[in-house]
Length: 272
Image (cartoon, rainbow, N blue to C red; front, side):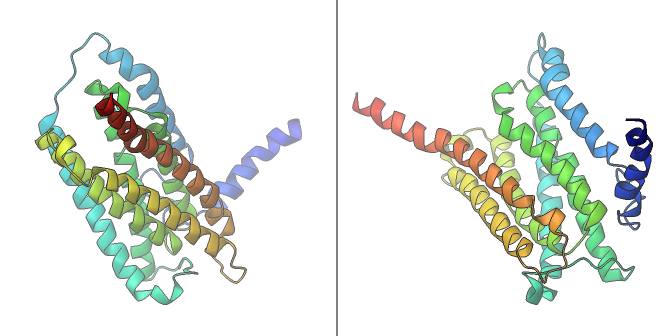
């Protein structure tokens, strides 16, 4: 036991200092894995304990103006990520099945690292989604899927920025950011006029798009992970396969309960 404890500092140094990218290590929320872990712990604590307790005897906050600004900001930052990633992918399209990370200090390599880091920070900002739900007492929206997804994206954002800021991380990020652009546009419409919730015909297609996203990411991860000649880290890309499948199952369950089962129940009620 004593020898194991003595080896922990060396193990930490090896994993989180010697093998992380020195270019991104000094950036905000990047110097240690305890930063994203602490964020997730505080987030979980607020969502499950502090937030509900804070709002228990208070009226729901409106926050309409805040939400309008927040959703516009999210649309803009995710649009920026999509545009910048599209430029990188266009120049690297021949390596779509094996896009490795350039760890040099060239402007192109630094740009990819910054883009990966910006994606990570944007996922940190996403945590405000749940905080706003709690403050508005929309507790029914704070599902396991919602909290799990936000928590995991923080950890994945840090991991890719720390170890592989570029390459296939750009391909993963552009798909997710594109979905976020549409998602936050939908949220913006809901704040401006809640009637859109029932009148927007493409609402269910947004969830379908999210399902397609996980199919693409899972297949792409599998193709990269199973390619013996690709030098992109297998330790990073292979875990995306079960993660993508798990997320698909969770979103499919949500889609089935929200759109398929509800439609059946509505049909039965109309017939009765």
